[in-house]
Image (cartoon, rainbow, N blue to C red):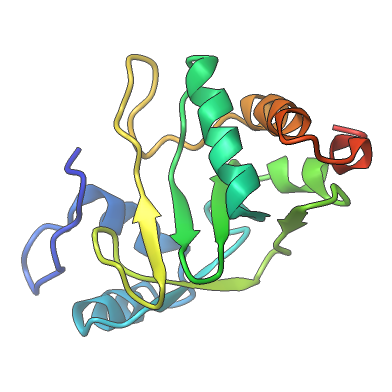
Length: 167
């Protein structure tokens, strides 16, 4: 799988991340057109995946924990100026995280404006970790692995116990 997506062109095959992601939009063709024009486009939570938002410091600790446990890290969006990351999780996983302090679960139908894969736009960029032996790069992070890494990361950062209660 290529690390970055090529700009969609009429009649040209789409790069895998673009092909996969644009189907999460209300209007997939409009999404491709916006990306081709160098603009961000809205993708919709609850269509292909659930979407959660966590602050950058906690998110980087979650990534470190996942890697230390040799777990697959799926795609996510980094918001540099916002100091936030948005994580794609399998459908249904978001409701298990609802009410967790420091984790915002996007409701079904909520939109997140994102750049095309491989481009930094609107202060955001996609991160597609490389494929590993057990999962392709587009595979989402396991909800169980994510929860375990979140608990460990919060503990490591000395976050309040309530930040991960009930996980």
